[in-house]
Image (cartoon, rainbow, N blue to C red; front, side, top):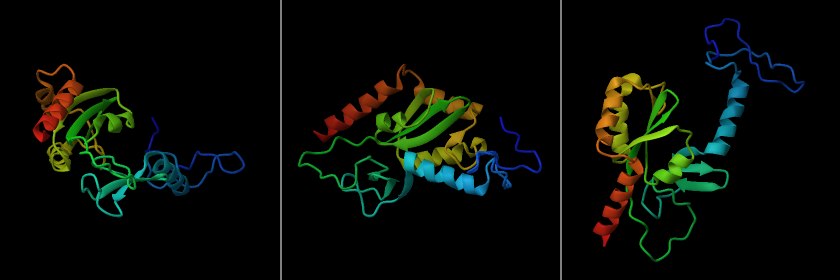
Length: 192
């Protein structure tokens, strides 16, 4: 792990000549100068997308939040690609879930209406549990476990209170995906 406590730190990424950049590192936990941090952020926006307000409400679900990729916008709630034409059939039932995943020694609390697609994009070691709910429930969980939140991210330390909450959600469920499939089936049945 990089020692962020060192004084006189400088950027280690290579410059145009192949030698370390050497520019000062400003209060960063990583040995990167502001210019290289900006380059990493630009790359991440291209690879992972940037969450922002959609140009207009999603035609599939009405959400105003989307993810912008170089190829275009995707609704953050239902993952409909903005600009695609909706067919005349009813869309699949929407089942919002709050997901709890583990990656190494961290737990992420996030939300999606399409967990298979969303979790396929996230590095994780294990799906711990699903909870019915949308961004409101996600926000409540972020507030509930704020004491163990890592910076301002959706990642948390695996504190006993959080792990107990996850155990309660997973009680009696061998496979979180089976629970999600049941919820999707119930939603489809209710819709008729």
